[in-house]
Length: 152
Image (cartoon, rainbow, N blue to C red; front, side, top):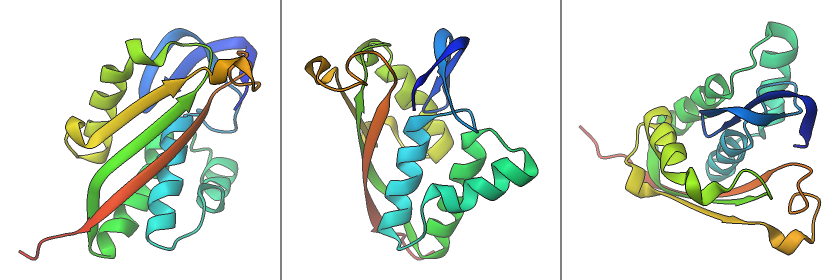
């Protein structure tokens, strides 16, 4: 997503940075939760975020990406899996991710109901070779490992 020219209130992994530029999107633009959604969806053979979000956002007005992630977490659990770990790679010039990564992890662990130690976050500016590294926006890539839930 690219940054808004006027609006503030950047959300990353459910963590709100009030003074940072907001990302342009139909939803809250939380690229971290969007990437996690797609990673989990791929792992269980489901559809991409847009398939679900278009209806929720466009028709029902749901903008909070935490609501979207609930859908794929429920589908993941119904297939008998839980999160083993998540790896995130965020590319942007601002904000500096390393300074806020512990806050993003804490937020994600609450949203995903998993331990912070199971969430890895790395960041790069991409040496300013892409529009993200030059400060035009943020992109996030996610990978997830799922493990079979123990029978109770």
